[in-house]
Image (cartoon, rainbow, N blue to C red; front, side, top):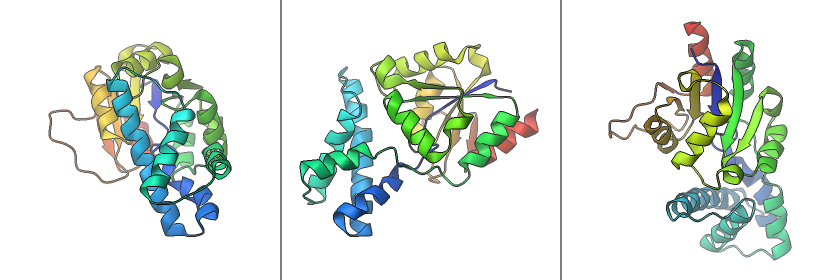
Length: 227
């Protein structure tokens, strides 16, 4: 039974595609807003991958704005600088997934320590956690972008998480909705929960998470049953 859960946040606790709600008033059409949100998320993830592989670091929220500009260009949408900066400044307006608050409440009731280890700046994580309602359940927020100057799945991120967990490695459970992040955690010898809310097939490369669930509440129930 783990003692400390280390969470990803974008795509695991909060829905980064819900930023379309912020974008829509600027583009006047929901489908276009969704397209931009999809492109923005894709490019941000891809950029963090290749920057880390290139041993180059560009911090958030600057990188976030650069990826928004790319997404607008990709979708042939023109906005002035003030609108772009306003959208980027509202990136904290991300909804929690439907089951997340109930799941976090259950995990806290089980006596578990809950921490976020994630790519955004600490301020960005705090802001969207407060907006989504997850903040009150968190024991600590760690920005690996700021502290390790590297993005997931760099080994530096997992090393930072283990150092900040405050317990033995065997007492840590790394929780993410991204299989590629789970692979990095498994490679560092960590127990991992893959919250596969996107219903993706597992890549058959010999790396299997400790738990695979459809949503976070299912994981909370599994851990409760193990006590």
